[in-house]
Length: 171
Image (cartoon, rainbow, N blue to C red; front, top):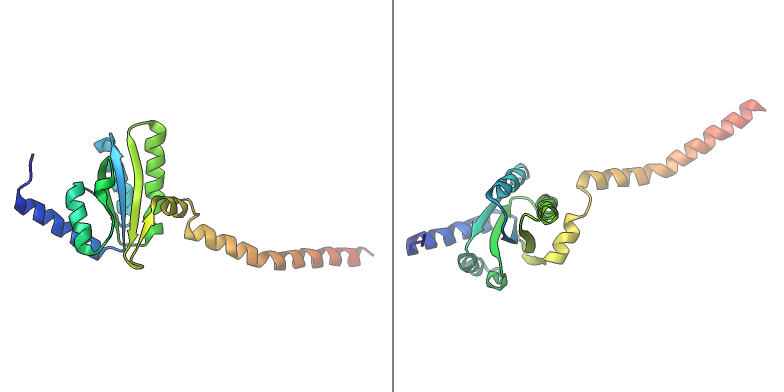
């Protein structure tokens, strides 16, 4: 079904609006991914405050140019979807990366990150950097690791003092 010019303009305007409202946009290329799998991804993304929208490459390209984002969607050989997230890149990276791994492992199609755009910093994030961010532990895990590192010297001193106290009382 072909879109009318009015519908195309409406889609471009909606994409520009989403780009302005959100902090992060992730662009993914896909082929052969089922609707059911996309529903699962949308459900997971909704939990982290993000939304997935499948957009025609040419219309997304126009939206990006209108928003001042230098990313050529026409270079992709596959269909494109955009993930719009209210949070920063770390809020959606793990979810998208996990989904891509599941699709690749199950051989249910192709799904790969083409790039992302951070609105706060006004910069493009390539797929390699995105994958690095996606594999980082969560914020909570990193904070607990830092807390453990800070308390470890005190814990060792306490163990040493406890052992010394046992020696003194035994003598």
